[in-house]
Length: 411
Image 1 (spheres, rainbow, N blue to C red):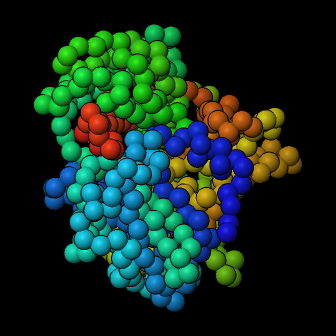
Image 2: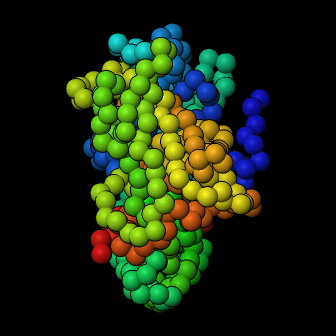
């Protein structure tokens, strides 16, 4: 059995209560994406008993068919497995179904097979709201990936606002969330035991705010106003590039090359950003596509991307490349190494053609993350914030997701 390194374990322990997270455990699996209704910019939240469709896609780096099966588990609000309910409580149909929708890559230098599955399908349908974890296993029963998503039954009303006028600074380096919750038709007798809240910035796990105590309590709902626990570092806009063609550079790419075996892409050397510069980005999201923008999933090739960041040596911690596409179990796959000859951090990552947004983050020795000195934090940064409201009946056996709201801060 393959075990994650100690840093990965620390990260999962610290961040297990936030938004959905995809993890790849096999080195031959790439480009895992979980999207609801083709909305690749938003977290994977689908409404219960609606026409919403969840699509999960990934590549296996060969042209050999692999018999993969998927297993769906219901999870609690903190993403631990639900142990007090039965599979029949949340799933209609069958579990452990094979993935039968696959397509070999066409005219690519790196051979792969793209696998796709959708939820709901003719074999299974979800019956309960809440957090879900879908695990894909190979023929030997070994786990190759997990994809997490949420199912919503909108029973409560959620208000969400973001301001750069915070309780610690005004228009400087932070943003503060205000939230309100109206119970609607559900009966709450003890909000401490029946309500569980999670607020995230760009659906990140590393700085999520969980179960923050409300400032105002009434029989109709809860309110968080001028709550210091809901202050977030604003950070900076995500960096981005787009690899659409193999023969010439496109947005954010300095040059392309062919080494006789693989294509290589060289984004422009990243410079420290000491001041805020407006840029439209996708807050860590990515989108697979090429110049033709037709059948992107199996006609886009894989390219080795050479990242380079100008920076003095950071004395403590590891500098990582981070985005929603950085799903490998081992964080070392996204760790940058320092070259003292030209004072740069460098990393080489194999990625599929498409649009990528990413940030540099510092993984501290204690497993927490922080903004490295090259990036800065500016109140103008356009971030998306998400609020997830979970509810458990009196004597209930599991947490249901009954409220969700996403807003984008624009100064």
